[in-house]
Length: 303
Figure 1 (cartoon, rainbow, N blue to C red):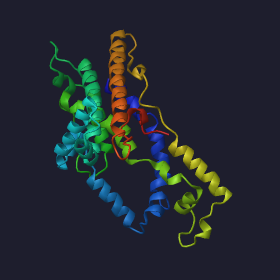
Figure 2 (cartoon, one colour):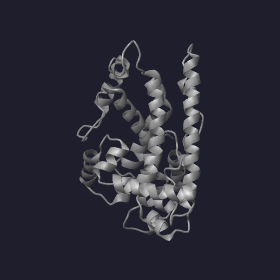
Figure 3 (cartoon, rainbow, N blue to C red):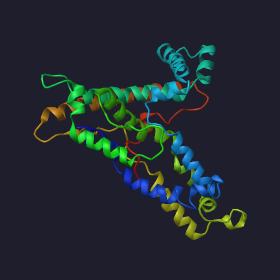
């Protein structure tokens, strides 16, 4: 069941990673030329990213960074304004604008994902006469093999990795984290299209000598290359806001399909409400915050 749960959220990811490696992080790629790094500095940058990466839930991340209280304080002010529509309260408005929007909006989205995952996991791993949910999670041989294989693939040297899943709670955390990372977090940190908005930028980042401005004017070949790069990196993937319950259907088990449809419909309804309330809150902000808007999110990191 966990493979079915996560399959919509990894559609096409292996393919896009291949292209990303060749265009972005390869020698002479965007990071090398656009970041100003030379020699071994790129390797140092990658080591820093590896050493700083953690497998942790969003609440755990905010608490570790000392941002948990700020995120919830911002959320309380925003919720009060959304409920009362008290847009004329200058003090509350200023506090909202100074608040920690990444945390407040991120927690709203995280909790929707978590409720969806919790309901799905509890449907398949429930307490009954055959044993507790935790015992069933620990006894799932295929799940254990999957997590062991993931551990082998995990980048060596990272501070933490998912490791073994020993309980229903740990399984819910992992699946929620997975969905959060490939939808919201990727959108928040990885808008590659910004690099390819002008042909001259592509020439500068990918080919032209950096000490010769005239040489950075695009040639016909540059034009074709940037068009290809733009197509490969910036076309939207499958949208999050769609009925993806078909991935959870099990032949000969209509109850599974019925439950999956109910859970997906409930999550989409929650996401749509979040979208509309986010638009309302953005009207009271100096700058729109869109990267956690469900209607802007892709379902997976894909071409």
